[in-house]
Image (cartoon, rainbow, N blue to C red; front, side, top):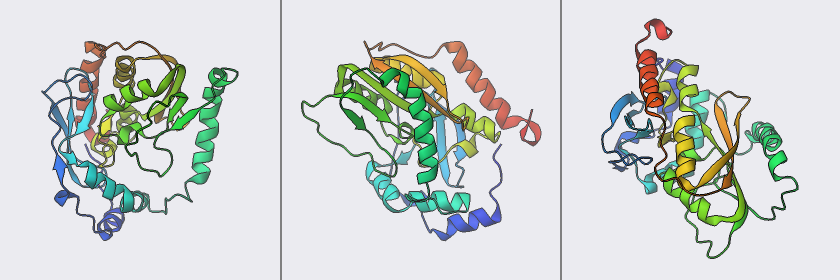
Length: 273
């Protein structure tokens, strides 16, 4: 089920005048993780009230929006709509200044996770992808390689998760390490007991531990540590560069359990089992 959007929240969102329905969009015809071309529609609206189609792969459990905005439409969205929309949803100003205190706490918490692996490891160069309010843009690094790459609160916003992880693997030195975190889709829909409340137009993809770990193994990363963040929503991974396992997938039983849980959440009376 979907929690009803309050009149006040809807009014704030409507006041932005953002016409999501008219934005140019692309269809996603195959699963970005396993390549399957069959999907199950699990959602029809997002948390802001916009009409979206959220699809799930019955083979691996990856969830994505299709159709979704084009890369150019997303660039315009992040340039002028994203922060005002999030602010309207929460009813308070959320911008590059107001989120700094929250981000400092987040950074300190993540640093505690990373420190035992990076301290004394001789890592000398680092690439930060998609940090803070920046945009994820194409860039040619030439022959340059990095000892560490961090991807904080960004992977869910990417248009090609698999391709980005493979490129990061190429950009790392042989001793290189990757820090990356996800918004756990299961944690998000269980928090409000609503699948559609966990969906938002700014996230083209929705990852669980099972799908993210399959992505990492396929791209050539070995997982050294997994950490549940204090917010109980994010899951962080510390990975080392390894050998790709191109056929890695979540266990079929885990995928069946995911769909069974989604149906339970969608159909539980009064939003609870």
